[in-house]
Image (cartoon, rainbow, N blue to C red; front, side):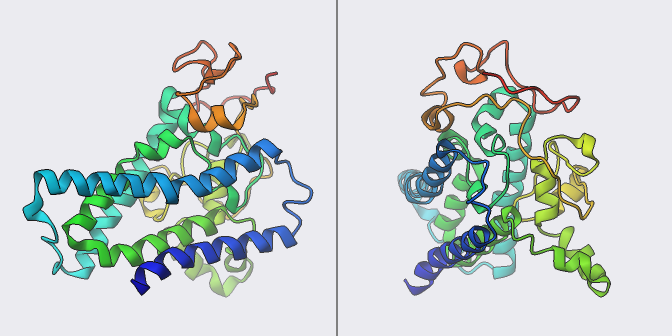
Length: 295
């Protein structure tokens, strides 16, 4: 019970500390974020851990008890090393492909869109996605199954480590600068930036356009492991940070449309969130020009 409590508490502490450092640095004082953006971010931070993830786990446990009860805790004595590998493959690798798919499919992009239309970084960006983006995420279901199979104890350590890495990768504290500014740290930096997501590599993913020579909006998809980008050819490492973030199509939508699409759709017929398929759909896999804001 204590391990479960710490597993949930540690990422929250990191979120508050990093958010506090960003606030002290002035990020939220002179911010490009609107009240609508803050609403999206705070609701996303709340809904995923309190409703979506628990709901998926309860559903998977119920279905497993109903169909394969003899498999409960079947792998409880499985090597810890192989349990970690299982989560890296069935959770983190599947999330890499889920994330990549959301940039290659116009309809899927609409669920991921809230994560990219914000024009600055920070820990609050971390979970900006439509509710359905997470509700359908294969990695959460597969993690629940692995826990049912007896890997729950390892998950209590795996999950906070992953959340901490993701929070740090979105953080404006840019902790990896230290690695790049000190020449004697460069060999260590070389290993780290090819293993896990860092601010430099993930900021590049959020950059507005690859034309700046730094951004890689259709690459650098890794969440915990950046290694997947290295293996599948989607990595770009520059050790620099883009100056402009966001997506070309910045038509502003109310928070409830962005989070609840397609259950709640935009009333604006010019919006890509007006329907599952529209003539104004933004193609996130193309990076050739910057669109002007639509009104």
